Image (cartoon, rainbow, N blue to C red):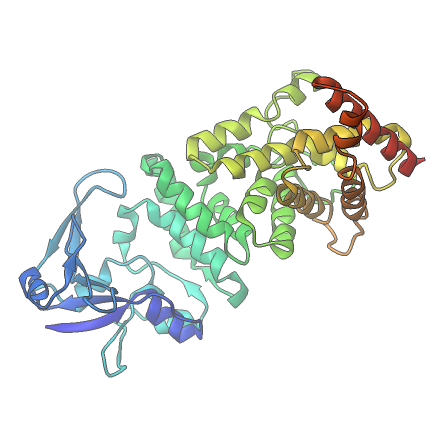
Length: 405
């Protein structure tokens, strides 16, 4: 029985990245041997075991045969006769197909070290095309390692495009699509994930609402990108610089959906505004996006045009500013309101990240002042029920008008 460290731990070590998780492959063993040594079996489709002490995953060397559609349509074969090279051959990218012996010796039959040196994401074999989930994984790795200079190899892009054209991306479950998307949004350059998917025509099947933005003229006065899709990517890039919050990054990704002519050119502007959140809601329901992500996306879609117009606020805007605080529940959810402002700032600064955004500090200042107006004095005056809320709103409006006068 031989044990090798494999996958991301070896790759990240070679890249000088901190290794947190370690996975191992066991060659020349049967499940019974590991169970006798105290390992706990957790795999159902193929034998994966947890080490009795470290709890790291140990998988028996295996091969896979395509026997159906989608990423679950495989028959797994394992046994002591399966070699390390055969096990590594089923992996997605060459940089993930490097193994390490206990003495530190590297086994690299598919030239992953050369691809690391060349900063190249390249598939191991044509078996790559049997698993549609790998289209998403490669796009995610491109986003994760973009800052290190990694790009997807041309031959891998071509294979991914063929996979997208085959229609198998539609077999991916919403949970798996969102899991990969969530990881990509957490990467240093999340926009690369969507750019790679668009390049291989994967956005059409997975994110049609985002794909529809490309080719649509930008409707923002400061926009210099050729279309709403490119502007969205620029805004997502800026958002990643401002915050690592995934909900905020997702909201910026969705902020232009339904607010451009991408969904309709024959309806009135009023109808477009009324329908603005519908594609966002559809996207979130389809992918089972967390509620807080969806709520923030809907809010920034509704409010970013108004927020951008507050660089020089006037008294006439006071009722609308108060409505903004009410609609976003800024009084009770200041953290979400802070994320909303970061989303709006990212959108405004998508072309030039040094552009001023004074409305952010101003809105925070006004919010702090208006929150000091509470129910106590009005209760003391004898007001009851809805009259208290109306009095608070009126007092806050008057205070805001004074500040803007």
